[in-house]
Image (cartoon, rainbow, N blue to C red):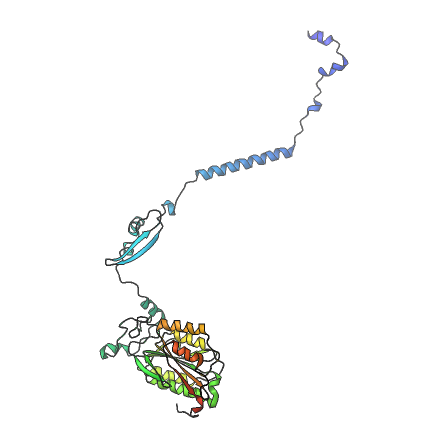
Length: 355
């Protein structure tokens, strides 16, 4: 059979059947194709491993795997049995006592039957003791009745007042006058204009203001408190705190007053605010400047602050000649704050008053 095929004559047009020319089927390798496939495979397997790791990671809640405590609002109530605390809202609605048991909260925080925190004691620690040097003998002499109806933030309660402030005295009310305007209380702040206009008429207005101020201070007893705020376009207070009217502090005030010069412009509102910050029972306000006038909103601000501290504001106005008006805003300032207004003609001053 093989020999027959071998000897068979094959037509030329069919000769390709017996030949196998492999030169046309050589596979050409493309390196860029292999690299792309390799990269795709790496990306796929990396993504798969990350997903597996995330799914198999252990799940924890809270710190160290402990369950989260309930969250809510703690409310304290003062009862006859002491302070009771409860936790409202949250996932469980449990009271704070059961929450304390499960979370090991000290039981002292739950059964707090001690006295409430005193804001007076905290503020007293912060601003220091303003007690009179002789106050330790008050209980023996029977001359002091300290805050029978309330105490101030500094511990110096105003007499008969439940809203005592830093300027409140220790209970002994005293009557004193300033240019004939009488004020009654246990704490006083003198706000005195020292602008350059007070140097008119050979500085007689400033000298008379200083003389009357020192006379008023001299009438205070050692259980009363006082402060002096001179002002022009800036403030010149004797200090940022109130003083007791002891002999030593009166001598200090005398030196401060006598050495205060008159100069500069005038700014009333900062001085009045400074005085009200001390919460005195009485403010004596003196100025010879009608300008700059306080506006109605500014007067209302002063009134609101004076109401909070129960402060009375008396006003004395200097000017030359007979009064040309009814006092304008200076009179209104006094009338809005339960005080007295007085006008004084500076041309009537003795040019060499004794001090």
